[in-house]
Length: 448
Picture 1 (cartoon, rainbow, N blue to C red):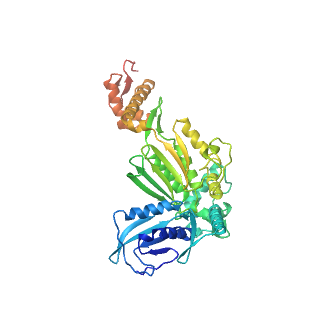
Picture 2: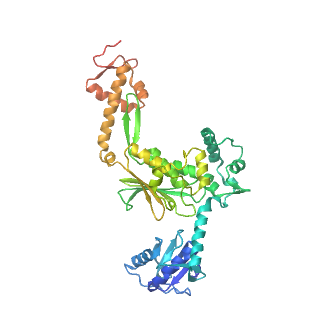
Picture 3: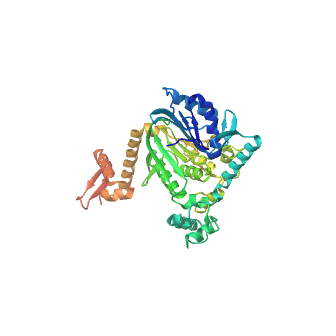
């Protein structure tokens, strides 16, 4: 392989030229959003190698992190190229403009040109416009790549919700009525909403502790927005703690974090993210909290409390995507998302936090530590409540056999049989009659 400098490749003899490399990284990010830097290769492509000590990689990483703003976290590796030790730095980012040592640069050919104030203003305006208009740009996808099944189901839900008054006839007509076509071309909003293959992805992980050091499970979801919403909601629901609460004849499962609030946070993270940013959405489940992240700047001049109080109107980053999701009732109404999350959590005393980050927006649900720490107690409480519900059912419905009781209380037959054995041992009930025709009675009651 012949190494040659270009608008996305920079060659350096050694890390003695680290400062110049940092400037080149910022310049490439501002021009192409990505690039590579090699240490140990001269600018004519000659591979000379360099000494790589135990702190060399760390020094390169820290210098890049400390001197480029916004921060980036490149992949840095030491490798042998033609038998000589070299260092490769691979990086990407879309939060331009990037500054190196307080100044902005642009890659032009294999040179790094410092930007004037006017050029910097143009770069900022271009980024802002691309971010705002992203969903209305032409997609590279074709109409036949639309998932017709998902689109048909969407129209059915929207009809049921009363927010769309036309039926599904064919894909093209429906997309046109939804405003997702321009002429015969798909808009990027249609790609995100109804194409299985697109730029949208969600990284989901469960961590062993309260930081990202050790993970127990990791998944990546890809697909259209509706499928991702379903998969991510399922992922969280299956990995949080639940408790069983019994009424007289009913069995209710209670999550440690309200599912409605989680769903609202997921919908908001997908509808309000910055789709011009290649970074994906994230779900992180820690021992003490659940984080839902999206790469989208919070509206300038506002704080989350403005929307939680319900006084401010919704500010939509992707109005076409948001309006489409609203019509199927996956979102109830606009401008109330954060408030609904807050109210749902407040009702069950689950702390929730909204954090505005430099790189996006984060919703944090605090988990109930006692649910995990007292799991055994929770099981005992469930057993006691279950036993009480069985006694009450037999009192009101004497003479019923175990299968009937299990069905009535909506519990597994084996679970019910364990409860019956416990109650019978305590002398509170008795079984009267044959195995096929008999049933359970409260002890001391008259058998008819």
